[in-house]
Image (cartoon, rainbow, N blue to C red):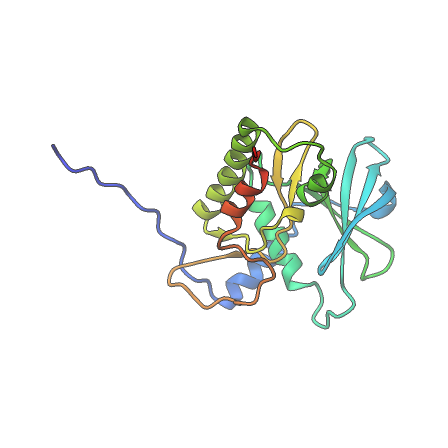
Length: 219
């Protein structure tokens, strides 16, 4: 029997600083920048290290969206690098289990910048506080398949999320999982370079712990 050989995709080479700056600028090009007044803020639904998230309604289309206001107060060099990375990475992604960046919106002041995302009804952190029963085995399998599908897609495109936790896993009312919050995400390249080791999520055992968390336990 002949041995089968499998082609392993090569990671992209590390880019020069000038190339990275050009790519960062291009990440902003394809998104419209409507004023934030085009959206009606309904409520505040979350707050993190990189911004505040609001539930909002598009006044033109009536679509419900999530508005993420970026934190700009401590930025001396202009637009936050973490947000540029997030926009650049989300622009390159197209997967049913990864949240979609719809557009960028601006306010009246220079530090009033919003990212407009598709809205998901729940996040797993709050969902676990309200759930009346454990997920069934079939539901666990469905959730894990979606999570692993999104993770495999990211790694196949040489992207590390680096902040997987329950509050960053969103869920629609139709049971579709969406991986969100790419503020700490990074691309990796060949040759590998050093990355910041201090990220807030303990990701090594995340997937296994997440799986066990939803298993129905019978006593």
